Length: 343
Image (cartoon, rainbow, N blue to C red):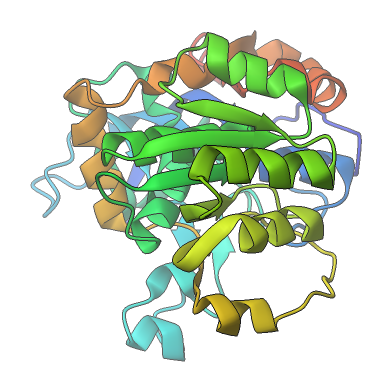
């Protein structure tokens, strides 16, 4: 991404792998919501020009022999793309996903949308036989799964996901996998229809076309009590307010969405309802490992979120189409698997 609205394909030298690194050949890469807003020029954590890409699958080309992680050439893998510094206050206390100097592939450093790239071996995770296209969607699933885990969603909870984009839908899948009764809310009827038609097992939807309708539907679904858990998966002041308003007294609210705007709201609602409000950033190694097993066991229909696939040569078109038609697409994936080997 050279600048907002401009995507180009460039040539680079094939990287040389260092000891302790794994040389990877990309297979599939998903366009994240953050990639999309980077393309639009509205993402808070992005510098230009930048090679995007932090959700992907790849084949191991080279690695250290007998490495401690069991990585071998030919293995189909995905990776943890959130680089942490290792010495800030957060890292020293084990919160590596919230590193004070976090650098995510494709955002603060060049990402994975290149034929070959190297990454430190401890960040590489075996897909355990998962098909490469589905494996490319594990990272965004981790984002949602981590948030749902932060909110301690459990069996019997009534959960409202605000935002029917990819992260919201994946949060719904994660909450369903934990036994929750899940509802989804969005301002776009088409997104709610897509989520319903793809059959993610939603208990119902709320079209957020007016504050009055939103309030009435929340009261109708919950008998006036509010939801046990609300998940913000948009990143707007209005949707944060929706989550605060819709959660029950003593409930849990988690913020996954990333935004750049301020919100002026009656913060005493947090005290009045005695709410537990959680932020959720990135994901942890355990999230990747757990989800790979969950998806491989058939407990989460991850493959359903992939609605559009573009060949590598049409990468610019993929970004343009996604930007212009976000309501008609869920997870857009670029197929890098047919690139001829560079000389």
